Amino acid sequence: MAEKKVSLTAKLINGGVAGLVGVTCVFPIDLAKTRLQNQQGVQVYKGMLDCLTKTVRSEGYFGCYRGAAVNLTLVTPEKAIKLAANDVFRQKLSKDGHLPLWGEVLAGCGAGTCQVVVTTPMEMLKIQLQDAGRLAAQRPVSTATGPAPSLVATQPPARPTPPRPSATGITAELLRTRGLAGLYRGAGATLMRDVPFSMIYFPLFANLNALGRERTGGQGDMQAQAPFWQSFVAGCTAGSIAAVAVTPLDVIKTRLQTLQKGEGEDTYRGIVDCTRYKRVSLISTKPKPVWNMLGSYIFYCLQAHPEARRAGCVPKRCNVSCVSHCSSFWDCTGCLLSWSWGDGAELSGITGLLC
Image 1 (cartoon, rainbow, N blue to C red):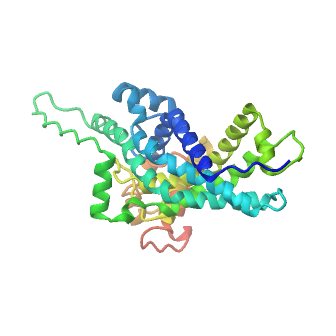
Image 2: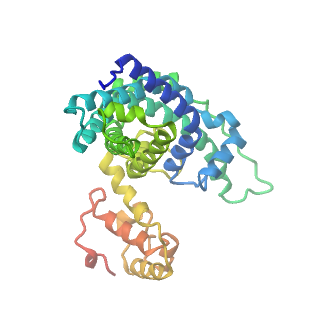
Image 3: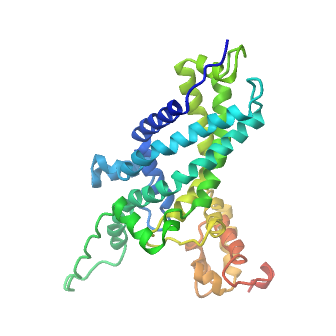
């Protein structure tokens, strides 16, 4: 049986409709992801459910869809390009209706590369709109942690609430101040995320979708014969595995593309700079009592190096109060390792820092 050819127009329409449905269903989760990934200083949210609950409480139900208009506008060309490019590359790389695994991976790589043209400005605008609510919620939290005001002191006037950003306003400002390159800030990080995602997702989806059926025809026939439930499960499984695999890259991309930073949050010069500062938080996720004691002892013996004081890991004098700054051995070790990467810090090993 001859393989049925699907026109490019049909593939573009299929990709656009799929993108619109996907954005409508999962955009609140994407908003929570963006806010949690950007949260470094003041902890406004404890998790995804807490973030969604507080968003609905403070911004209303439609606050969970802040920035969705940008996605709904640009997701159609983005998904259309991605799905159509993958199909085109698969057809070009297949021989006699058979596509080897390396061809599937290469086709996914090409699809991820092509979509970045639309994905980068879309993500750039979406992140600013999604994160605006977190920055607004951070202000009362940060002021509430300060000292209690005096009963007789005059209360300072409340700061005016900044206007809510809009996609058109952000676009105009970026084009005016930074040109077209402003909209493509973080393009390298976006490429690093989307290419591996597509290289994992498309081959895994195609093989899961073809399970249990003989190769009686071409690759297109095998995909067409799959029932809906199998395609749905294959898409969920492939998407989940690919998303988990590229989550660290997505965190880097989100923080690089965020223009407005909250209290106590770092700014980054590029991918390497962001990765360097992220390393400490990634290795300090399992505090244990024995490591707390070892870490406190290490910092008790460390001199007050200027780079360490700048990072806030060591107080001005070397004493046991270091334990309040680094809660685990991994925190201390991470800060110690980061000194050798610091701005202009030339250290001659751990022995040179001991008291």
